[in-house]
Image (cartoon, rainbow, N blue to C red; front, side, top):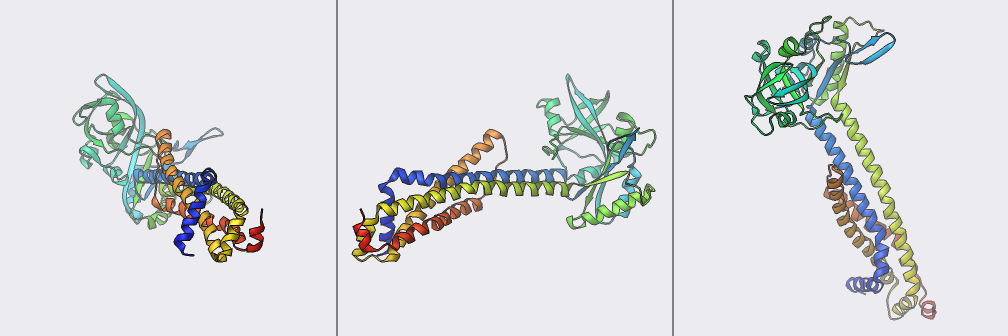
Length: 410
């Protein structure tokens, strides 16, 4: 019996009981669709983490002051003014692999323009801060060293703040008042989006660090050189750990911290933090896909059940085929093809529904969705493998029937 005839016979048998065929495929359809939807959601989460890593800047380490104590209470990190601009200069000259070191001060203030105002985060920075964060402007210019030296009253505004204050007008060249001080907007920053903590990185205004300390935020009385944090950009990812250890040793030495004392500062390797989040997202994706794959197994069991019923219903037909010359392998191939066809058609329909469902989830939930061809092909292929696995026993049972007993079957 030729393969074409076997395939034609298998398809004809499936069309005879169309409703039962559709119900049998339902488990596979749901399984494949669920697998594709879950993998797409997980891949979208990983893509979102990758965007956050890119928005923060590549190979970035942040140095912040330690925690102050008030009585018996320990306050949060960054509440003790221990990190200074001198520390930043020491890191720049003594730590290998460093390409940008940017001290920074910050505060939450009200920005005003004409009759509009908005609460925003002000950062006092050096030009290296923009290099460390891989941040550029969409209009105007960046801050310069001369701006810092001269304590110039110039500012860069983020996209969100520009939309809130200027309402579609051109921000560059406009005067914004911060703490009753006029600042000229010299540039608009490119969008960064949300940080990993959910903060809008575009709702900011950047001014020279000298201007921020002398005219807006003021200086710490106990430590005039203190800064909120230092952003350190390392040349390559391979040097991150080494640079982190060098900075820790350097700062402990500069702050005269004894071996048995804890650091009065803390280092945060942002790449490590976000890569850990990405790994968590990857594990979650695999877990969701594994759970969704249970539907495929259930669908396979349904295929086995229906195929066993089909063998019983068609026992006389099998006996007649054998009597006119069909071989056992022809019977085996026919029933196996029926099972695989059920799985593959169900897989194809499930893949289409999974893709549509993924877009629907992204649209209604507002999530990032990434659909790659590899998971789709893998899910449909796995559905075909389920058909082979669960269809083999019924096919083998049909092929091993005795022709005489099969013809007698009522």
